[in-house]
Amino acid sequence: MGRLDGKVAIITGGARGQGEAEVRLFAAEGAKVLFGDVLHDQGEAVAADVGSSVHYVPLDVTDPGAWEAAVAETVSRFGAPDVLVNNAGVLQFGVSLVDTTLDDYMRVVNINQVGPFLGMKYTVPAMIDAGKGGSIVNISSTNGLAGFGGTMAYTASKFAVRGMTKTAALELGRHGIRVNSIHPGGVDTAMTSLDALGGTMTEEAQQAAYAMIPLGRVAQPQEIARLALYLASDESSYSTGSEFVADGGMLAGAVNPDI
Ligand code: NAD
Image 1 (cartoon, rainbow, N blue to C red):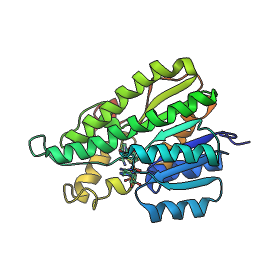
Image 2: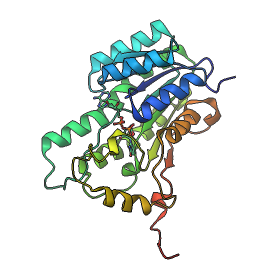
Image 3: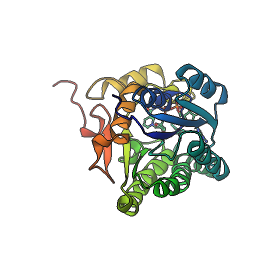
């Protein structure tokens, strides 16, 4: 028996990284999954590899029309959604407050903050109509719980995701729809590769930063996907409006390397 047997899920940013891990894990646990991204070739390849229990659609999370189409496609192909994972996101790293341009700020906020807002706005009516309850999982970050120098736009967007999660949970509890946020620390995906960080960090500096994490390493995407699976499933039936941290102990405090 799968932990998501009979459930229908929508996952954003599913072409790679944590989203891809969630698509694969949710399908393996019995869910039907419609997932979207802006990386169409990679998304189609993941869908072909997993099989008919998943379906890829182009879904730019900032586009209300694409959201309407994705929810309609989910309902007609698999049935009403039980689960929404707002996972898609972008990072801007190593840019000071003063050097952050308004264009960059708005681009990050549009994808990371407006995206999950639109996702909930367009998916929730289908959940309510179906009357089965549901679970919404919003991927925030440790940057949604604490600041980090050089990530002004990203931190703003991830704090917003955490706040929206709580307001949505308050409004949707009466419909049996739970809404929680996940706060990963560092995760080994394309987002945190040295290439993606665009020369703002050396390999030595990255290794030194990882060494300061109590567990001494970053997470693999599957480790975050397993937390998303728990929140998507009925195993988390009494959790809503809450923050679920998976950060290797990063926010617990500062490691003393001598002790
Ligand atoms: P990733 O870059 O591998 O995956 C992000 C995915 O989102 C990509 O497939 C990308 O194409 C997609 N995406 C970007 N813009 C989009 C848009 N407008 N519409 C639809 N899809 C879009 O990185 P990841 O680590 O898998 O990130 C997943 C989530 O986890 C993000 O929300 C990220 O902010 C969050 N997160 C990541 C880390 C980390 O260290 N990697 C830490 C904390 C939180």
